Image (cartoon, rainbow, N blue to C red; front, side):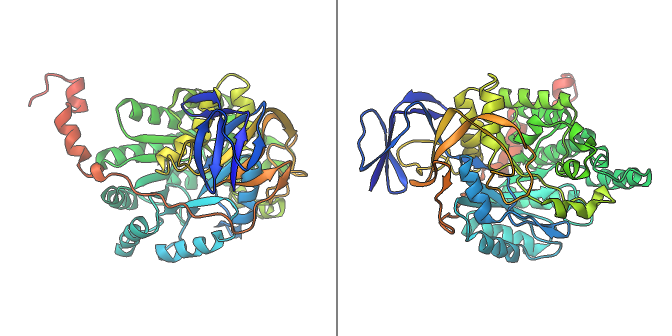
Length: 483
């Protein structure tokens, strides 16, 4: 049975126009005027936008002695209530765990998902089996990105040797490298020093992870990627220091992409000084929230294109789970929620303030992620042949965010009490209405794994081409340097 979405303004990253959208089965088959279908969905007065893509979530994550409270069913249904139809989650092997074994575990957990999903795979250690599993994942399982944690010493942290080995293998495979950029050695040292000074509450968390730790790691990862000639994606860029490293690399022509979380655009480090321990601990995530001047810079980075995507790092731990660190901030499980709230928060604080146009909003919430992770135009746009992941977006609808009414499986909400204008009125995932009239309609297990092909393998020769094409940086600075 066909469906037609009629009377709305279709918005893509390229522009907007009044048009109908005809859907047959799971696909868009036409966009234009006067289209007819068996079922009509009225979008009068609303925008019709591509379903959101959250490229950074952690459902059911085993972490810091507990397991994230959000599973793949509750998390993907909450996402669709907020207008996000696809997530890219993370497989994170434990130390010395076979990478393929971890991947099979996560795929099993994800079978309950109601929204579409894909996976980045973290590299947490190195030997020949890891390299072999990376090849299997790219060739047989639709994985085209590998994650590297530069933080969390004595757990999942990558040292430079692992980074170089993994980046080199990724280059060979045509895969994208992603990094959590924080200097893990510095963080480990600072955590101990701050705790020894008697600072044990959540306020110690941002003190132990200053912007310089992120800036140093971001620059190091970028420079390693530059030398090896591999594309790089920085997750949750939170500070001026890291943004400057990204900006410099982009202006030099390096293939670097950067993500910002909606939370880092909104909250400052003041949240950690709340006298209510539970509320302050609820904001503990890494990197932490920064002083206000960093938020202003991040907005400028998003507007200028230096930051490419928005995400949530959705990783839920309830109040009782957070209390594991009641007497030591180092034991507070790191993570916040937001997969349901990202798009409304960004519309309210981005589009309605004039920081973003509707097309730029679509780009940073959907299209750019689809392009970077190589699932465009299947995802991230509304065009014939694309998956019918579509949101009827009410730009004037409003809601007050609260744990009492949200669909996320967590007993508090970091945006509690915030009223936002701009909401998902109806969400379709591959042509099926999964959210409408305030009700979730998605069936458990109806989500699909989305394979992501690897990229052209031209990166292997990129270094030599660059050397032949232009003078070195030293030669540019010192033009008379001896040849």
